[in-house]
Each structure stands twice: as C-alpha cells, then as structure tokens.
View (cartoon, rainbow, N blue to C red):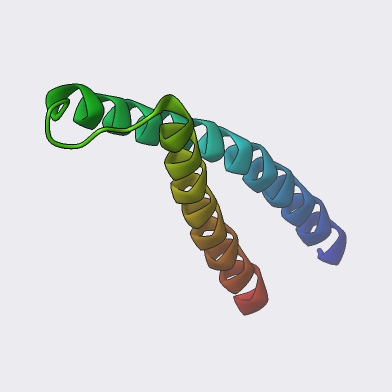
Length: 79
C-alpha cells in the first residue's frame, strides 16, 4: 500500500511540474495581450513601449508563478 502511494505522489508531482510550465506560458500570453490592448486603446493617454510591456508581463507572470508554487507547497505539506 505504501508503495502505491509513492508512485501516485510521483505522478502528481510530475503533473504539477508540467502544469506549472503551462500555467506560466498562459499567464505570460494573457498579460501580454491585456497590456497590448490597453496600449492600443489608450494610445494618446498612456504610452507603453514594447520593452515596458515585456517587463510588466514578466513581473505579473512571476507573481502568478509564486502564488502557484506556494499553493502547491501548502498542498503537499498537508499530505
């Protein structure tokens, strides 16, 4: 019984690692899209450079990643 639990835990951890990369890619694409739309809509009011948009999207993605990792750490510590 203990052996099956270890295997299922390894599979869960592998799935979480893969999902982490998928979540990171989706979050970055989402933040880039939102910031580009804001930049196009408010061209005369707020001016973003593409470098600034990349930096803001990266910072927001890192925030999402930190939240995801903390959530997973809490999940595995409860088990």
